[in-house]
Image (cartoon, rainbow, N blue to C red):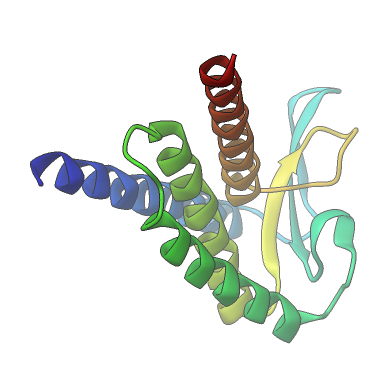
Length: 159
C-alpha cells in the first residue's frame, strides 16, 4: 500500500511539475515579449519566438478551439482511467503518462484562457513549440519504450 501511494504521488508530482514549468515559461514569454517577436539565443540555431498558435502541431486545424478542448478533456480522462490499469513495475509508463497529462493540461489551460496555445521554442527547422509539447513528446517516447520492453519480456518468457 505504501509503494502504491509513493508511485501515485510520483505520478501527481510529474503532472504538477510539468504543468507549473509549462505555464511559468509561457507567462515569462508573455510578460517579456510581444507576439511575433523573436530573440536569437544561439543564432542561427535557436530563437525564442512568441506566437499564439490557433491550431495543433504545424498549425493544422487552426481555430478549431472547441475540438481541441474536447480532445484535451478526453485525453485527460483517458489517461486517468488508463493509469489505474498499469501493472506494478512499469515506472517509465507512469512517468510517461504523467508527462503527457501535464503537457496536455498545460496546452488545455492555454486554450481555455486564450483560445490558442502560447508557443516560443524556435529551432528554425521545425514549427515553434512549447514545453508542454516537449513533455507530451517525451512522455509518448517513454510509453513506446516501456511497451517495447514489455514485448521483449514477453518474447523472452515465451522462448
